[in-house]
Structures are given as C-alpha cells and as structure tokens.
Length: 427
Image 1 (cartoon, helix red, strand yellow):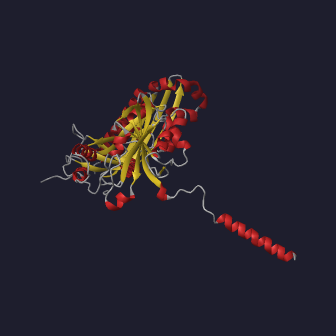
Image 2 (tube, one colour):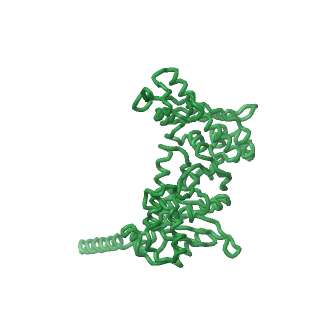
Image 3 (cartoon, rainbow, N blue to C red):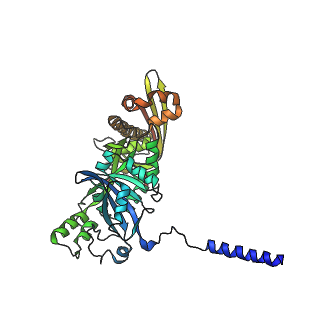
C-alpha cells in the first residue's frame, strides 16, 4: 500500500513539474505585435509655449525590405524611399511620455532592444544629455553598446538622411564608427556605456562623434537616383520636399566636446585625430607632411599607435607628459623627390612626421583648454595617480585645466615605403 502511495505521489509531482515547465511566459512579446527600432533621435522643441521632447524613431520595415519600400499607404510620417526603414516622430513632456504616446498612433509596441544608434540634436546636446542617459540606464531594453552621436541641426533631419551604402542610416553610422579608429581616426567613437563612465568619473568629460547632413555633389549620386523615382502618390509640393530630403546623405566628422553634460564646442577633423592619439584610441590613419615643398606631398599611414601619459605635480604647477609611439609606411609621394633608401632622407621624413603628430596633438589640447573640457581625462589621471593632490584641486579643475602644461613627444618610424622604394621618375 505504501508503495502505491509513493508511486502516486511521484506521478503527481512529475505532472505538476511538467505543467510548470511547459507553460508560456506571461511577459512574452511576440514579434508580430512589436515595432523593431534601429535608431532613436532626441530633440528639444517648444509646443504651445511648453518644452517638449521630440522623439524620432527609425523603425525597421520588413515589407519595405522585401518589396523595395513601395506599396505603403500615407501615414503622415516621413517616408524613406529606397531603404528598409521609416522615421516616425512623437512628442512628450519626457522621453518616456513620448514613448507612451507612440502607442496612441501605432498598433505595435515600440521595442528598443535592437537600438543601434542614439542621435542627439545639437540644441538638445547644448541643453544637457543627462536626461537621455538617465533614461537609457533605467530602461531594460536600451543596449549599453548602442553608439551615441550628436548632429548638426535636428536629430529627426539627421535620421531622415539617406544612407549611401547600407539599407538603414543606423547601420551605416554603426559601420563608420566600427572602422574609423582603425582606418581614419577623425571622429569620436563612444557608446552608451562609455558616455555613462565619462559622466560619472571625476576629471573626465564626454566627447561624441559629430554628424552632418549634406547634398552630395555627384550628379550620379545614389540619393538623386532614389529621389528621382516617382510614384509616391503625394502632391507636387510634398514630392518636391520629399525629394530634397532624399537627396541628403550624411558624414561623421570631428568631435563634439562637453562640459559636464552640455555640449560646449567642436573639434575639427585634424584636432580630433590629435585628441584620439592622446586618448590612445587612434589605431590607424594618414598623416600628410610637406617634404621639400610648401604643401603636403607625402602621405604616411600610421598603425599600432600607443600613448603613455604621466602627470607631474610640482611647485611650478601641473605638467602632463605625453609620449606617443607608432609605426607605419609611406603610401604616397607626389613630387618624385624622396629616395627613402637613403638613411638621411628617411630620418628627415620621420622628423617631419613626428613634428606633424605633435602639432595635431597640441592644437587638440589647445582647443580643449579653450572649451574648458577635459575630454582627455587628465583630471582622472591625476585622481588615479595622486588622490591627495586631486582632492585639493577637484573643485577648481575647470579653471585649472587651461593653465596646465602639456609636453608632447612623438616617436613614429617608417617601416617601409609601400611596394616600391625608388620614386617614379618620368624619363
């Protein structure tokens, strides 16, 4: 009898276990009820005299990917013809309020876990990005690896710019960010996690990539071809406006520098390259120098750049010693005057390269001092190496930064002259 009771209890427990483990998830979100988001744009606007957040969402359109973007009725949203996405904007008193207002015009819930890029409009960036970062950290869906960029003008207009090589603007931005530090090193490269770290770390300031839209000059531009394809079903004025929007593409160039959470100015491409070298974030790029010429005529491709920073605090003040080392190759020589096989020529070329690297780093430091923005983390470096000294200057660091002395020394070598050693001399 005891055996039967034991078997009955065992079977009952097995049934209960199976029922528990095979039930559906109560918090499930089925894809057919979701709008997959690829990028978010943030702008600050005024509606009826009250400040509002304009949230622009770059949504994936599977039907557009399959059918080339045609066959969708008018929704009042900005159409992205020839791509697989659509930009839709909603407003709200806060970011979360704008997201909830999304549900008033969409039958599908907004899903943020696939966000690739956050684009912050210039006015929003100058007013402060803490609200955006706070939202990203509290929301469980926004990925910390999402890239963060600022843009000239509004984020909505930036997201509406047409990608030239990828189906989505967000994908093209992400791919540019991935490869920049290895091939170009002329724009910042930060994700949500990096921005949070810079905001929360004493002695560090945020620096973000800067996005600009423009109309390409090429007559055979991909954007012009897409804009020329008719059949939108809108009025002539609307079609013209839409065509102009579709003619615009974008580029990432330079860096937006912040003080606390507010954008205070820009670094151009040359200053950005110097800043990235100082921050040990430049893995590759081109340095152009003038050899026996009044204009740049030699291109040097640097690789494996490594930077060491050392703070020195004395009665004379604060000095940051920066040593940058790297290797590379000469990949272009325009005037056929340099025979790199001669040792003295090689030494002179390396001297010119190192002088140019030091110059680019110096103008980057000068620009950061002018903006009183410690994008290099000099204060954090002092904090980590000499906490006692940092406690004495922490509250005055913004005023002390422009007065510090920065010594820069570059040590780059030319490993090879490309595939040929002798210059091409036309006979």
